[in-house]
Image (tube, rainbow, N blue to C red; front, side, top):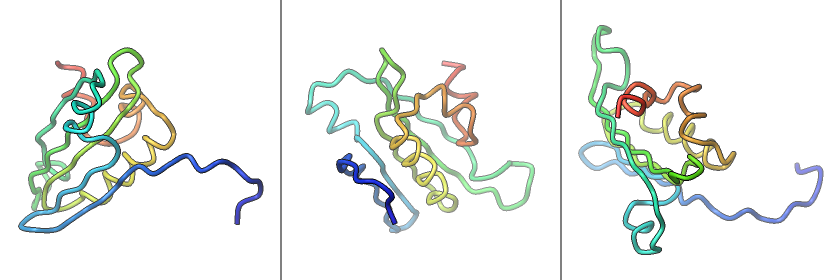
Length: 118
């Protein structure tokens, strides 16, 4: 399916698991970044998986980690009851594309208002 040979860029380490709620991770975790001595920043957003005025909104927590100097996304974790897989898909694609946290504000991840109000 590939048209030209390219070197393997490595794995993102994306995973999802269901226990009482659903939890997922992609890219670096905060624990791994600390162990490597990497400098990073983080933001945690607590919101709903869809608009709160629409019936059935369930809680969702999103944590984003990025490199402060460049803004490049390093990793993310998501927990909640619904919509986790969709957000992980977007975040894993953003990591593979080497997007910045500012780039994330231009796609719907539910991060922008909380991130820029810090």
